[in-house]
Structure formats: structure tokens, C-alpha cells
Image (tube, rainbow, N blue to C red):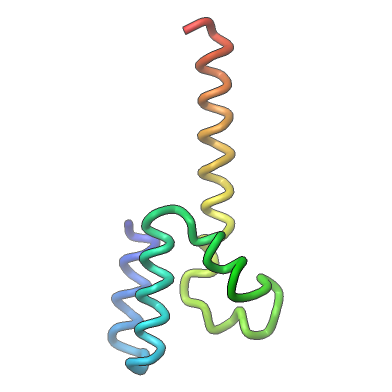
Amino acid sequence: MVTVGLPVLAAELLFSPRELVGAARQGLWTMFSVSNLFFWGVTDYWSPAAKGFLLLHTWSVVYAQVGATYISTRNFFHQGH
């Protein structure tokens, strides 16, 4: 929540209305843990245009969450539950 909330709050104070709409859109995708799909569809992670995305760092966070969930689930079922 803080990973999304603080940057979007800062954007409300610092961004133009157009940029704020983009930040809010990124925030929604991030809140549902699908920001990687959003960013994959609109930019390349390493492109110069990527600098304009407030929550681009969440792309890797989503992959870490998916990986942790997979490992936890796998371990749960391998323990014989």
C-alpha cells in the first residue's frame, strides 16, 4: 500500500493534471498486482520513455510476489498437507 500510496500522493502535489491521470492509472494496475502487464503494454523497461512512469519499479515487485507465492504453495503441497 505504501509503495503505491506515497508516490501517488507526491504526484498529486507535483504533477500536472495530465501526468496525474497517468500516475493514477499506474496506481490502479499496481494495486491489483498486474502493473507488469500495464508496463509491458505501454513501454520497454529500458527505454528512455520509461523515466516518465512513477511506479515502474513495481514491475519487478510483482514478479517477486508471484515467485514467492509459487514457492510457498509448492512447499505447502510437498509437505503432505
